[in-house]
Length: 155
Image 1 (tube, one colour):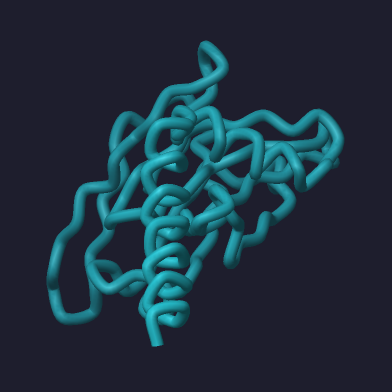
Image 2 (cartoon, one colour):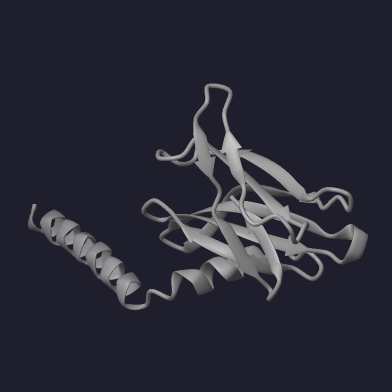
């Protein structure tokens, strides 16, 4: 009986020790999220913005490609014991004649506080703000983020 207790006690101590070791060795979240996005290995990939959300969850916005092959996208990430991991996302090619390249991602299955994400790269320099009005009249002001000096997007 005492061997079982010692074994259980040792396992519990190892688990607690591993947990505290992970806290001590915790790296910067933004740096780790950036590494996870860069692992997508898209050509000329640049992270535009990282938004930390609920506990251990984030959304990263990124751009990749060049010229008429440019795309803008986002990924949802979740932090687990091994670090940050992409759980969902995607990108869309940027249309040259579009002033606001919209994209949509449903979030309700991944985040408890959010249902949907509307985002778009702003390619018209005259657009200063982005406002969304739903069918039932609710108004939302998009947050506009500037990145890479002059590039902007709203979400």
